[in-house]
Image 1 (cartoon, rainbow, N blue to C red):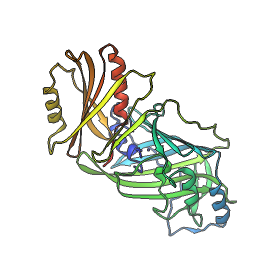
Image 2 (image 1 turned 135 degrees about the horizontal axis):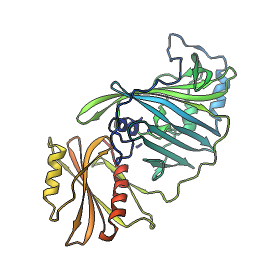
Image 3 (image 1 turned 45 degrees about the horizontal axis):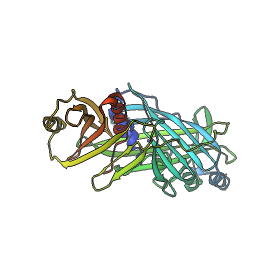
Length: 364
């Protein structure tokens, strides 16, 4: 769930406001979800030696050509949300699709081909994020798993399997699922491998928790997720066509995707950052609107990487163009994004601007 973008940054913070790396979606209503399918829980008190540890370790190191469905929950305070999606690994390439339920379901995806990473806010629009850091992919996660301790036999995804548990925080599952943990605090992760009596890998899962500063206050997240592999192999995983480019400014703590495709409507993206102290989003937005020489449209609300935001459009008479303006406040910083386009392409410019907004990440 950007780098989820964070362990499940994109997934967790999004579930709270109805945005999973997809800022144009509406809010999601709290929804009580069923607990994860696993019936056994990892506990040092009940763990015993796994008889097929060596075989399982060998199988994990060579695992390839697997596909499975995601089944899990994310709890934000007392609000539970269902996690679903899929994981595929074949020929060293991988694809992960992770969705969070709600009034407006949201989806995040990552495709890795030949060590190159492409991230998506919706499993449709992909952004070229460069080389996947070594040791953070699915294959590396499997190779790093502990195989010596059996936390008991349990049912998961309709099968009965041994739950082979790694030491807490030895393996960070989130990057393998395409999620970034850079802004998470007090993060913990426990990896579990689902195996049979002979040491064959049947699937994997994880228990994860963290806290994150949202809206000026820390919120606690807890996630349980399991993936059981299917009997069939996945199709070939290919690099997405026409991915967007990625712009990251670490000093400003902001990053976003933008189109470089000649087939897309022509736009220019500009952003301005400034410290606004304790000013509210409404106050900052009013200041931006008041500076406009032409009359803006009415403001519309949107969620940007877990923060509330407003956007509006302006037809500029002197410049004879059409612009879309986004205003968002993160911590004490105000960010103003302006998308410039031709007046004749209003609808297309608006649509592309919303796509840009859906990719925005705060990096601190």
